Figure 1 (cartoon, rainbow, N blue to C red):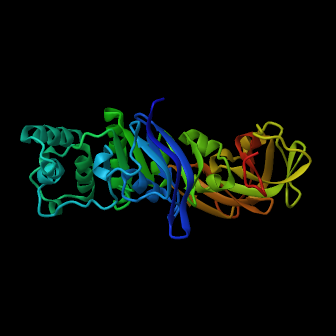
Figure 2 (figure 1 turned 60 degrees about the vertical axis):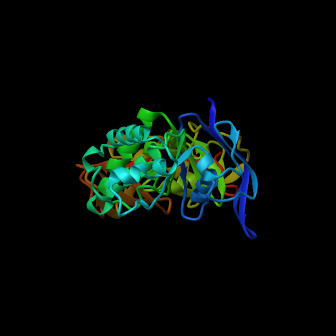
Length: 360
């Protein structure tokens, strides 16, 4: 795959505080990459470095095969959409969309063509004469996206564009952004702390922590084969269940002595002797009653809390002294205090070295 954005050995420090550390990232032509992580992990800082809004301490940034490490933002061939809409309140939607092109001295006919094309793609034609104050949050964000779109660039940068919207609008605009990418096939780099946005939008997700990319992979791999405990705990809602114990032969032995067979598990690295380990299980991989009897491991538990979620039901209990959450069908008859059989296949789980926190 031809590289659209190439980040090579990038480091950035604010004074003596390192924010990005020897970071490398290759973004393919037309790829949708999501930078995901909690506040302070360096994802927005990385995006601002790509945009040219921050000067790097070391390393290089290439866009479209051209070294732009020290180029001005306007010369990088990028369009950026910020968390705040940053629209001119006194201007109409049409004027907001065309402002940058008019300042650049582009011919009027070309400006009109680009504005009309962006308005059609983003379904903004009915609002071109309105001012931002007369638009909803979702419409304002579409105008902000349109302002980047009219620049007709190869690379779009999104810095948490949906975080100011309510849940329904976020879901709607998420679909629109995905449709936009499928239609334009431009390279897009998108920053968010919302894992649902990351999983639904991305071709590949880069999960960051302390200025370092922990794992870069497609959403399915990130979710089902997290590379370490940090990634495993960050992705998933509710989050992955964890059991503390040790690996011994073909068994995982929990701290309370509960033995769980792991013969079917695909180890990514060889394990010898007895190793302190953590077993991770997704809530949807734990089943109950008759389904549990067919699993390599099953045990009777007492339900502590039940949370009806509409489409399914979440139940809280414990195995080997560790809290466990599992999903059940929305019509499952479960109540607090009930005792039932639950089970799982450890081959579908994840096992991590307790000391290094890496997947084994």
